[in-house]
Every structure is written in structure tokens, then in C-alpha cells.
Amino acid sequence: METKPPLPPFTLDSAKDKVQAAENAWNSRDPQKVALAYTEDSEWRNRSEFLTGRAAIEAFLTRKWEKEQDYRLRKELWCFMDNRIAVRFEYEWHDGAGNWHRSYGNENWEFAENGLMMKRYASINDITIQESDRKFRWER
Image 1 (cartoon, rainbow, N blue to C red):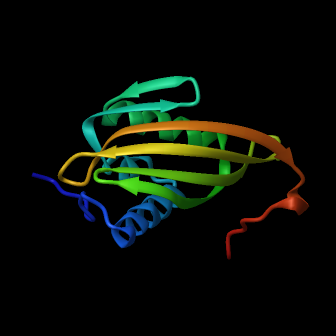
Image 2 (tube, rainbow, N blue to C red):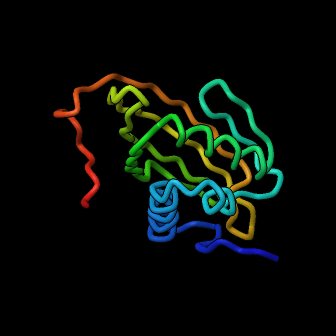
Image 3 (cartoon, one colour):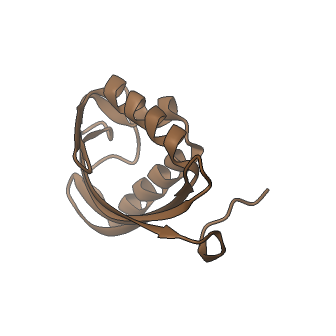
């Protein structure tokens, strides 16, 4: 059986580790790698889109990062209990025309015993920003 430590039930330290691992994975912008953190039948709500399963998650992330270029994300643990974690996040990206955006949101996560995420519900809002207002920059 595949596992993705840390495993529930979460402690403060293991919940922080899980959030950091998610941030690192999403910042890789590798849809296949990110999708492996979810159960085969994982359920998602992302904005107004509802997804089920790894294949749908991978396809969604591929579309997302084609649109949201130079994506850079920060996640913060909000609270946790047993096999659930809530996070707040913000990320920046630009579209194909070079317009920069910052997206803010909250996610509720529920994990299976093996540490894979079986439910992810995300609420997200976007604002347009000037490139000079960016907070997150890639070190090149």
C-alpha cells in the first residue's frame, strides 16, 4: 500500500510538515508529482470546479499551470485535528499577456490512514497586481 508521511492523526509538527510538503510539491508545478499525493478516488472542489480521481487532478493541474505561468505559492497551517488540516494560502502568477495576479484562499484537507489526501476543498479569490507589487520571486 502506498503511503505519504506524515500520517494521521496529526500533531502540530506533523501538520506543519504536511503543509510544507504540499507547498514544495505545488511549487514544482509538476502535475504528475502533485497528483501522487492524492488517493485514486480523491474528491476536489477548486473554485467552482468539481473533480474526482488522480487522472482528473493531473489534467486540472496541467491546465492550471499552462494558464498560471511562473506560479509561486505559500501555504500556512490554519488548524488541524485527527486526519484533517486547514490551510490558508496565497500565490502569484501571470497570464500569457504578462498580467500579474495574486490569488488568496483557504483549503480544507482530509487524509486517508496512509497519508494520501482523499478530499480537498478550495475557495480562492484573485486580484490583479503590478509586477512591482509581487511578494514571491524565484531566485534564478
